[in-house]
Length: 379
Image 1 (cartoon, one colour):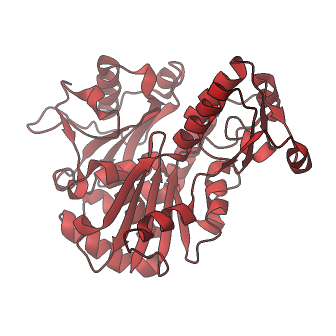
Image 2 (tube, rainbow, N blue to C red):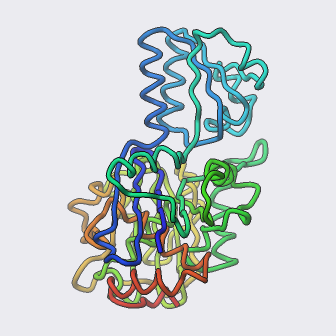
């Protein structure tokens, strides 16, 4: 059994090819620039040469690509975008137009002068990954499944905060299914409001295997729980410090006991320590996080989690994990199967076992046998 796992973040896309015949540590892997960073680079090159740009294709991750598009506009150069591509920056096309981007339909795109640089947008390029691995003699022609992770704010209604909309979604998913794999879906089951998840499903339409998609932040936390030291706990606090978003979960025998999400760029170590401590205490209020320009908080278990015993107080993963170096919470930097960069991929693989039950026995044998057996929040 082979499963391609791709965790598509802001800085990198992390690629892991699970092969059930191998120990997890021996799976083939790539860590390469993320799609939004690749578009960012192409836009910066266009700005240097003063070239007009037309964005087309699918909705994908923004961040760096949006920042580069805005810099291109500020430099006095033109940016065109089809509606789907434009929604990479904002679901409201009026906001896109206010940014200075010219929204065009397919016919208008085709009629643009030849000297306008066309940039196709997509979060997942199966053909490119297949070519890269093929250079090393690795074929993707016999895949059993593909599992993809992206961060999705969701399509908030007009005049509704996208921060609140995303956290409403997080809370509703946990109320319906109190486990981290609640944020994973088979391709046909993705909710209409999750526009980026649906777009990455569309990007994978050339894959001849079942496709599962999942939000990246819960995937990273789920992957961190596969670290043997984390799995040894009955209850544990796990934080994913991403480049743009920080998401922390409190886990225990009943599943997810609490969660908060904030913007990493607005946090320093003292503020993050305080948020994590209050999540552990069960005293963190949604309004406190939201009014601090974060997404929100949700507590659904009243018993506090003590962080005072010996050992670590919080397990940490993510590219910005160094923010907690020196924290009084004694952070433990999780590295499941010895590889922090693939934490999200391992979480995607674990979630696939829940979404594709026919594959579950084999996947779980690989993951849990190698990481110390089932943990309380797994059952």
